[in-house]
Amino acid sequence: MSEIKYEIIKTIGVLSKSASGWMKEVNLISWNDREPKYDIRDWSADHSKMGKGVTLSKEELATLKELLNKFEG
Image (cartoon, rainbow, N blue to C red; front, side, top):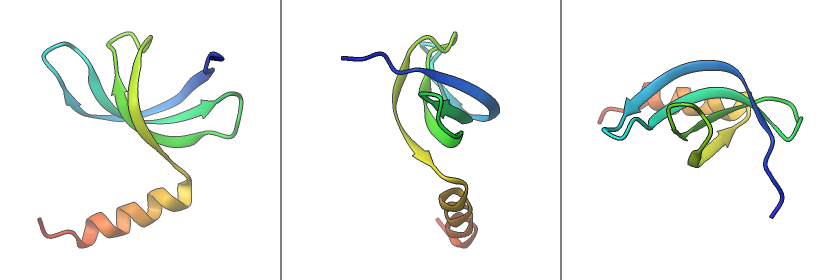
């Protein structure tokens, strides 16, 4: 399995932190030297390990924002 290359371009914020120190973060990340996308996933404290997550384009993020603004949960 090939290694995944990533660079965190900008940290947007932390959504939550677990007792083990892992944090669910929103970041702008470049994956394998591609154009940066917005990303939500769990990270270890030093960002050396990551969990599964979701990657969104700027347009998808804007759509998500609109949906969340309508959310009444």
